[in-house]
Amino acid sequence: MHKKIEDIKKNEGSPKVIKNLFNKKEINKFLDLYNLLPTTVHNKKQNVIKKRWLIDYGKELEELFYEKVKNEIGDFKYDNLKTDEGEIIYGLFQESYNPIGLHIDGGFNLDDLIYKQTLIPLTPVGSTVIFKNRFYGESTNFTIDSDELSVRKLNYGQNKRSNKHIGMFGDKPFSSDDHKKYLGHEKLDNLLGLEIDLVYEWELGSMLIFDRTNLHCSSSKIDGKKIGLTTFTKK
Ligand SMILES: [Fe+2]
Image (cartoon, rainbow, N blue to C red; front, side):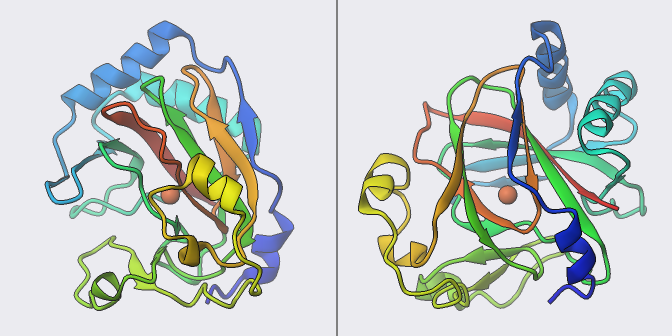
């Protein structure tokens, strides 16, 4: 578990959507940057492409991005892992063809004072579900799938797999209405005790900000593929 839980809690708040933060031209700049960057991971099984925003790319755009984010959340440090050379990464682009399952992005260093994370949609269709429920450990995928749970060998930056969320938030079954509406790709039993805080409907130009302790996942809404830019921060 995180060591600075009390300080982490002091910075917590409700998820927040900022509309009209980026104009069309700026969104296109993010997309150009995405196309330019080298691929970090192409997982054909999960059908997902991940690219890291490396510091040698999109310097001008980073200045704009940093100012916009800082304006919303105050001082922060990037916490998107490091390259092999030890350089920081500004963010992670993800192109996905399937919804992403329930997880937490608590990071990989339990000494850190983890803070907020941001999501900027770069394609118009999609939505992200933020739960009221929180977890104070490392980045973890929450699953009850036994094959997933048996995965032990993890590469640098890969999330742990765990089912310890089951029972942690009580035994109230998840709303079957919400399940049908947003989360058909998740097993109902994997959502035990969870309650939705916010469903963020992707809208170009907007940005979602939420705490790194919030459990979250994609909704089942996807139109072919979606591309988003995420940044994790710490204090
Ligand atoms: Fe996430």
